Length: 524
Image (cartoon, rainbow, N blue to C red; front, side, top):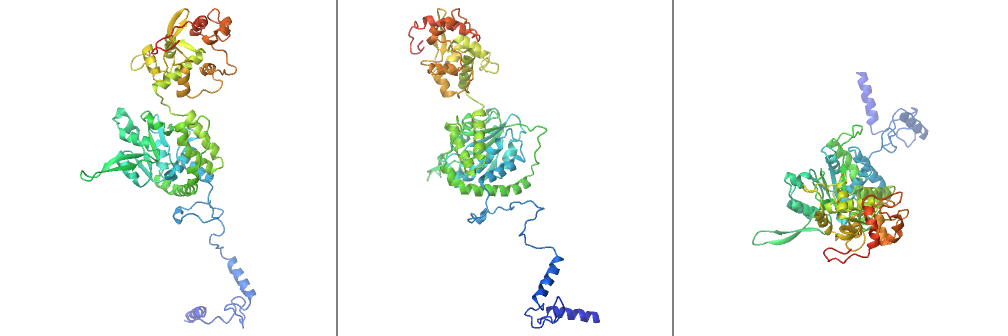
């Protein structure tokens, strides 16, 4: 009983309104000390030092925990509005680097340029309403299981207002876009456009073609028969398309950046894709990307970035916002973005070209290999048939002949001419002159690299500028100089030209004897 009384007395002493009569440290009377617990300040300091020495420090997070890595908040703080002046924010190059790191965790990309390009493309979706052009993104592959869908699944958590679908009608699209651009992510698009599987979606194709520019609209009549109104629906929106290669309309690919995905090698390892984890972990990355783009959006929309040599027209148009974002990011990104631009435009551009453009390219290859500036039709067709990967031996079940050759080239204003060969007049094609090949090559084919052995040398000579270190071409216009070397019709050069070169060289003697032809056949 006495123990209980003592305990109650101690409790009363502690909680009593009256202060304890003795010092908590030394036990002496407090006397006139203003403190309710200690007789002197020294006793107070000693007591506190003794107590804190036996307890773990509590600093409320003031000092960092060295054992834990620094991480961004799970919930992005963008809802708080723009950060105050002087607050810590990541630089643009750090934000884009974090996007590249994140997407690379789940995909094995075909080259080093794909992940940076995707980071720039994801970034541009957050300011699409401030831009005038948005490039389409195409992910294709030769076989299923090459990672196309995975890129889309990760990307939907990094882009602005994602709408991922495998089937949607044009009417639904332009009604969804009434309130502003959203990012449309189409998977299995090959089933939509491939005619072999019944795909016939001209309205969708036209919508995707036009919608890469902000001014694009679709006009529809809205209302019932008594109150019908004409309404213009905006169709401008960022779009990504994924599907098996071969079914994409050419009119869309020319407005797109195309990534040719490939199956992952057995030695390539990526992280397992668990969607709920990706959604949670991507939130801070997306928040930083959105916040940074909101700060530089106006700057990007007004920018006119320099582009790599050879990138022009529509390719320059669709890459302009991505290059501007890279310039705004700073660091290594201006150089990285231009390397990616050169790769996707000049080195890995659209893989499908029209039959006519392929024909012009193969003819340029033949003329360059023969090192001539003219060739009779029969010899040209034989050379085209000999191209191993060419389609010229089987055009809808028939080999290329002179009539089909003339028909295909006529579209490019290239027509056969009369050529004098060994005293005979034969039909053929020339590089120079009216209806020659040089003009078509310069308009429809990319320039060849400097020093390449090709008919570009012949084109340069026609224009009066010969390439350095290039042997002279056998030409009727320069036959006087070439006559001593080719008097026997075969030439004495170490690099002798085969076949047709020998036959064309004697033209020198009769170069001016051609008779004028009708306008339909051209002039010699």
